[in-house]
Image (cartoon, rainbow, N blue to C red):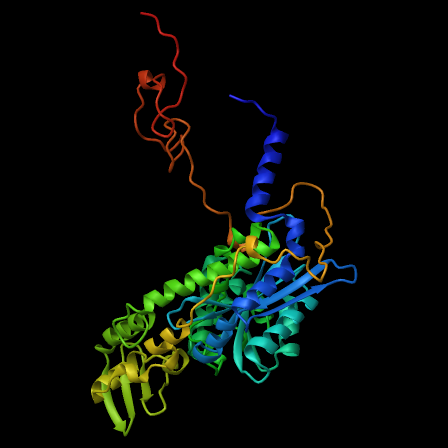
Amino acid sequence: MVKISYKVAWLAKEKAMRKIRGSYSHSYQMLETYCNELKKVDPDAVTDILTNPLGNFECIFWTYGITIRAYKKTLRPIILVDGTFLKGRYPGTILTAIAVDGNNHIFPIAFAIVMKEKNESWDWFFTKLRDHVVGEDHEFILLSDRHKSIIQGVPKILPKAIHMYCSYHLSGKFGNKKIKFLVQEGAKTLNQDEFWGMMLRIWCMSSKAHEKLMDVGPVEKWASAFQEKSRYGIVSTNHVESWNKMIVGERMMPVTTVLSMIRDNVIRHYRDYHNDSLKFNSPVTTWCQELIIHNASTARRCTVERVSAGIWTVTGLVRSCVVDLNKRTCTCKWFQHMGIPCAHAMAAIKDVGHDPYKFVDVFFLKETYMETYKEEWIPTPGKESWPTARPTRKILPPLKVCMPGRPKVIRKRGKAEGVPVQSRRCSRCKRRGHNKKTYTEFIDDYDLFTPMQFGEGPHLSPLNQTA
């Protein structure tokens, strides 16, 4: 057995990791080479690197030709944006724009790495998103948290976008669980009377909470009941938050490896979703099919009365609604906002004997979903096959301000998020799920001094026993 010092072991580990993932500082110099290799396999990919006058890295934007074409042709006009910090040796934040496919899956469309989430960074990202992905005249809903830079940048760079706030982040302003629930339900409901009823309940519970909620801004910014454009039931940034969680490993790597691993992640999900589309047994996606089945089951309890050609009055357990199948609308607003027949519409469709799948938006059809994932990705070659010539552009690592103490890796949780639940280990039996005070089983004195495997029972050193 060879004994080595901690420093020698640490240096050996660093040397091995450099061979596997590359050097953190040299990785910035390889960015231009990687972008050139990316464009060889994806000519429609867009990359843009900015540096300061001294050559230090400042930001990079990239997107793929396949994702641009898929968003423009087959995906719903709603984009979720968020930022998450890098965990490597140099500072940085990944900005991501996420769309949602017809099966309610994550579909990343654009990325950027910037130094900080500030006005200039978000403005630059939105400019690239407008110029290369969505276009200047595209009307869509942009959903985000209430970051000040996003609030200021969207009207200026994306005037056609309808900026709305995430209901989860909005409810996080309140510590009371009942108020948080009412805020999230208020963001979902499509009925204005129900919305104001929930706001009244919040006011009765806490007038300060109600005032704080109203100070956020116009209710049109977060409540679906006051938004004419379809949100398709997406009221939070959970999709982009999930994506940030999925790339937590990539965020610890050197910057060029970050770009490469993110693309591999996108390709892997793209391939899995393509294979899933081949297993669909209905003309619509699995997620849409489940909603149709649920609404059809609810429609059985509704009574239907035909008023005129294409118009029905449908009475359910709670309310009476008017359905217009010609315009694909219902007074409950679920039909037109989701793009899928609601329970009232399903009752009217059943009464006339039509196929319910013909009343589903094109975004949820099987053909559209397969169109989204039909193109084939070409992997980028490994670093060993990259050109050995020195890049024409010198890119240095970003300027780094060293703060006192150990660098932070885990983000700070908000007050409303609470403390993550951790399983406890009992000091008596060494099992998880309870503690010493709540342990109810009897432990014999002999067992306390019997050596056992850790995690299976008492883990105490045996005492010398005499006969």
